[in-house]
Image 1 (cartoon, rainbow, N blue to C red):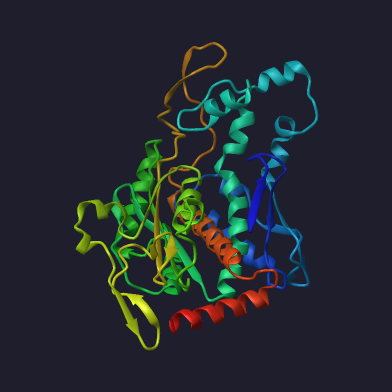
Image 2: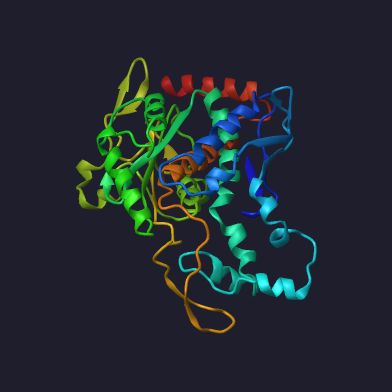
Length: 388
């Protein structure tokens, strides 16, 4: 499985094309739209989320509620395009009008300057429109298809907030379905109700001060069988793939599995997970400090992966200094619409990014042309490893 996305933040639409989805898999538009709606929620979201009502149209690859095995194409229309037709339209414009609209002031913390240098754009809107986090809606759409595949295979996952602005949620040992339910009922998508108000207050304070704050999100997965991934080649290690995809999300700067960086401060006896065996469930680990991975492969224990999101660099009342690429004069960075904190929404994005990597690994390792055969292969494999 693989996917491509296309589209600009204020362009006509976002498009996702997914290849490699098995044929005969149940898939409804609601499976995708529910995920898109979740991405738009969360305390601290900006005005753009009030403008857009993200829904996806399935324009190919599905017939009568089942996938065909051919590429899926999903389209999310940008409602705000009607206000940007002159700026973002594909037709040529008069030179004087074009000059008046040119963006020459790169914003610190964004892709503006680096993208302009790479592609030779003197109008930095050509960069910022595509590098915008708006593109994550298209990635969530792809991940929603992957989540549907995983769900039908008995694999469930949930993304939620662990930390905002240094305010940490307590650890909890509850099933994945309960994690999903609890986090969805929280304005900041957190499992620990005792820190909910404090997190919201921190977001409100940042917004009042024209600043922004970041945090840590976690994705928890149950049902992945052991041995998915590979130790043979670096680019087939599943935890490596997940880590790369997580860091590719806008504003994400770090990733860890299980106890993560805490392992550097502990002895080996406090880090590694002892192996045990049970007549009913087969092999299992007595602990899960490594977050469900050993040697680039799943252990059969829950996958626990965290991602670190930096504060959004667009600061409403505290713009950072930059340099105009035409005049080379210093200036205070311009402000586009932005969120004070997008961490709750980022939890949804990360959940779907992880889902796609898991589904991709499953379809690579097991027969996947037809979904019924894939499902049977997974069931047979689970029984095989239980009796190994």
